[in-house]
Image (tube, rainbow, N blue to C red; front, side):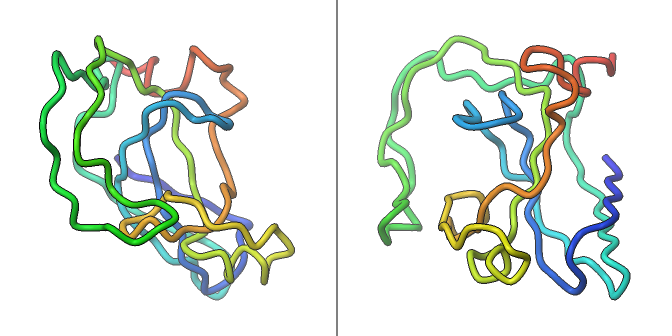
Length: 140
């Protein structure tokens, strides 16, 4: 998936997630990766995966999960919850750190939305599509 975003703070790190809901509480979410804006506030990222109407998360049962991140306030879960298939058709972009969010005039709040679970607040999402009709739903 090729993602281009413009009008963001310059020279700032961001993180991309595929998410169930475009706004809080976000539902189940899948970390895709990072990108950094350039001196004009443009960020570009290419991400490999399945991004379509078939994008979903499923856990037929609970089982042990690895815990490489143990630091509060967002340590890894050591067991997954069981869930039927849940589709994730939205995209969300988070500031890579609370400091980057604060520098842009946003709340200095830590969230789990980066690879180390130390991201800032959400900067952008696909909320214009409606909760159950994110853009990935349109791709066959």
